Every structure is written in C-alpha cells, then in structure tokens.
Image (cartoon, rainbow, N blue to C red):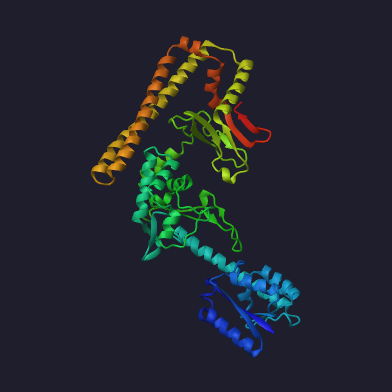
Length: 504
C-alpha cells in the first residue's frame, strides 16, 4: 500500500515539545513506522512555520489534491494535531471525504486509525481538545500583546516609515535618519501650502522611493496589503497617512485593527477610543506644535479650485456609488479651461462618475432662481445686510490670504538660507523660488480683487442696482445646498442622476 507522510511544525508548538516536534524527527518517526508496516512511501509533505488552524498550508493542500486523485492509500501523521487543529477540517476530511476517496488516516502517538471501528468519538474529542488548545493559546497571546501595548512596547513586524527597530530592544523604536528626513520634508511642504498630491509629485520627481519600496530595498520582506497594484510611486493617500500619524510626535499608537477570531484572516478597524496610545515612548521626528498646525490645516475640508479660493460646492458633491467626496479637476483645450468633478477612485467605482462643473453650477443656480421667483421679494434692508455680510466675508478672506502670502514670504527667506548653507542646489533654489514667487503674486492679486469688491459694495444703492436673481442665487448657493450626489453617466441615452439635498 502506498503511504503519504505529513509533517507540520509551527511556533505554537515550540515551547510545548520543542525538539521532539522538529520536522526531521517527525520524518524519521513516520518513515520508521511506515517501514514497520511494509507501506511504500509515496511522498513526504511538509509545512514548517504554519499553524494547525491555517487552511492554506501549501504542503497540506498539495496532499489533499493528491489524495482526491487517489495517488496513495494512507495518510500518516505523528498525531491528529499535526494534520489539523481545526475541528471543521477534521469532520470535512477525516470523517467525510477521506472515506469517500478511499483514503485511510493513521496517527502514531494518539492511535487514530479510520479503519478501526468505534474510534470516531475519540477522534472528535481529540479535534475539540486541539481546537480548545488553539483558542486558549490565542487568548493568552492577546493578553500578553495587549499588556505590551499598554506599556508602549512596539509589537509590530515592520516599523512605521521613518523609524527602525532598536537593535538592542526590538520592542523599542529609533529614528531612521534617511526616512525621517523625508517625513520632515513632507510636513514642511504641507505647511508651505503644497497639497498632498503635489507633495507626492515632488517626491516622485526627485526619485524618492515610497515607504513600501524603501522597506523592501532595506531587505525587509514587506508587502503593503492596501496596495492593489504594486507601485514605487507616492500618492496622496500615503502622504495623508503620514500627515495624520501620531507616531511621529513620539506617541506609540497600536491596536487600530484586530482579527475578530483566531480562525479568521479578516482584519477589522477598531474605533479610536479603543486604541492603545502611550506618549513619549520614542524619539519624535515632528515637533508637537508643527503636528498640531498640520492637523488644523487638514481639518479645513473645503478644496481649492486652483486659484486659492474654494469653489462654492467644495465638500458638498459626492459619488453616488462609493460615497467619496468628488474632486474638482481642470484641463486646458485650445487655450480654454474646462473643469469637472469626478470620483477620486474611478478605477474602483461602479462606472464613470463625473460631471461638468459649469453645467452642474448652472443647473443649481437655475433651480435656486426658480425658488426665488416664487418666494423672494426684494427689500432694501436685505440689500444692506447683504452688503455688510459680503464686506465681512471679504475681510475674513483677505486676512486668510494675507496669512498664506506671509508664509510664502517666509518660505522664500528660508529657501535662500537653505541655498547658502548648501542644503539645496542652485537649480532647486531657482525652481522653488520661482514657484513661491508665482504663488505669492497670485495671492496678492486675489487680495486686491477682494479689496476692490469691498469698495464696490460699500454703496447700498450700487448693490441694489447690481443685484439680480443670478447674483442672489450665487451668494445663496453655499448655504442652501447640503449635499449633492452624482450618479454614473449612461453614454447610451446620455442621462445622469443628480440628487440634490437642500438645507430647507
């Protein structure tokens, strides 16, 4: 009779029987037993460093495939727990499929033999004991790991980008100077007014590998599970995670995700109040003041249309399929600019979710005008209040734009110091200096435009002359619109669903 030998070893067994459980010892024991029974060995299947609950063990799956094709007659293991610790697999294979396939299952230590009558209950009891063992082991491991998390000891396999494990203590993090410098640059650029995508573009232009590739280049066997398509490029999502990560201020944050069961490979997110947060566990890369300034800046959800002033629908238009806020994108064609709103992840969404920005804006203004015709009667007091409110809004915008302009003034000064100290090259200085000056000029032009608007609206009579349904609708737009959902385009019948949720 032909016999298949199956051996398995995992870390869960290391402290239980140690040397006696080694793969080599299992092979020797099984080979000797098969010879004693005059069974011809077809093949030895091995899985090293795989848990008994793992259903994707390569050696195990190969053996099951061969068993189904009846390439051998017997499966021989040292014990039932070597075959599996999962009660469902015991029932599936040992008690159901193996008999159907004509496969006999035998173990040496716990004397399992599916040819022996009256042993099914003992096999089931063994299966339950093995599963209980794993459940208790899982609970014990969770207790130990949570205790380490409470103490601020790092227990992850791969440190956060910018850090590396302390060679003297793998539960402690130390700064990785090369990656930390990139993290500092990302924060600096963001405070200087660069958006997340622009920062990603700058890093890509300078040939800086993203965190995944950087770790792999350092010899780490790191795989980014969130990256569907392998890439060496930075993206705005990665930049956003770095800008939000408290680890960079010296706070150890762990336990953000858990497995619902020791049997499951699925990972679920944990609400923030249940995270393990311990301050001052490692050296900070980013000062707390800078980190808080970045968080405050990121809280401003309204997106710029490229001019530096938020468009009236910013943060209000969402993809109907995935629920994500849509981005405003502009293209130039024949020296004319065309703008449209689109889903930020069109490749993973159901269809083409985009709409011409001008068309959507015009549609909304027409609807508001229809309401105004029905319910609005012009009033001088309304004009006065409107003029005063517009002046106040313009003054607030001017102060905001002046603050942004001052940042570029300081950035230009810092850039010059970086050049004189040799931190950046002459070419880099010229490139960034030109860009900073251009942005500074754009901000000054916007400030002058707003000042002119205040002067024009100072006269109530002038405001009354200028007011018409379109201008009122334009001013009301940000206040009366709660949310807009854009459906996918149907190119065949040229229709598209647009759901508008009003604030009245």
